[in-house]
Length: 439
Image 1 (cartoon, rainbow, N blue to C red):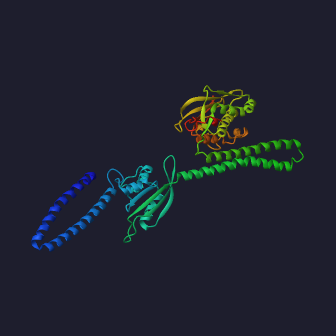
Image 2 (image 1 turned 30 degrees about the vertical axis):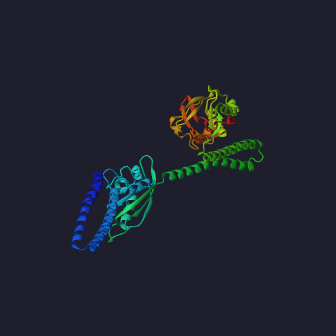
Image 3 (image 1 turned 60 degrees about the horizontal axis):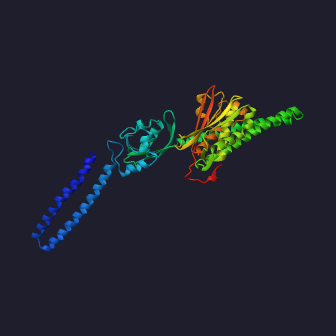
């Protein structure tokens, strides 16, 4: 309906113009006959100037009315595609305009996406069903003061919001105000980061507190009851050394994780021979494998697998994965490393090689798999500490793989074993074809 009216407007103006021009000409001729030529000419010029001014004013008024009609609510959605609606939609925050009856009169795209029940003339209580928010809106309507508050909403996953409400119009005749403008900012990411930081500090404190308390306790014992007991001193010093080494590993892993996160946005570009790198990682763990009577077997039929990567970080990735396989795998079994032909990586969509490390351990229950890369997450905390784990190994692996624009997948079957697959992108020869870049 609106489009048809807009299409008829130019036709109306053309008809009015077509009628106005002959009428003006006839009026001018009548004036010439009525008075002498000079007066007629003066009066005619005056009339033409007045008509031009009037026509210009009417044109400007028409443009303003057209703009208002474009911004007014339509049946199809929030507003027609006018400048005001475009301006509202590009604002990332959620915006609502509410009248004095608490009904929605305007909103932007972010509001509709976040609160699907939003609609024109909808009571705001059906859009956001939070008592504190509705009370704040009523206070703004009744008293005209600004209101700010934080609230949570959502089903399975709670979202956290910060709301700012102001009166649209000043009070008039002591009655309710004309309406309320609401700005709502999603602060869920901020709250999640705060919780993650608090959990991280709590976990680090716990991980350091236990070995530190052990060391302090043995120091006190060695200075008192066991001051002259050589056997106790030897045993206590061994435990203290073990706990101190555990704290040192934890701090080293924390520093390593922090450094990786700082550079995670910059993918590495060095050319790496993947087969040579895996052989190097396996050789670093020969002593550990021999202690548990395990064997690390590399299976690779690809002649020259080249990837783009950071040599030291990738060594850390595969030593961490192989260390877990040796620690938790059954003794006298093989830990196999396989390199798969290039395929499309799920995370980045790039082409890359897949490296799979498989062990023959007790396996991991499916409920634990999604959380294995969380910091300090352990399936069996006591066993992990006994074997020297810090709870950060797979978290470091995840962040390094993310930096390489690769992907990480962990599969496990209880009683059979665990399989960890790392996808790494191929080296882009067009970007750096220099042969001396190999590592």
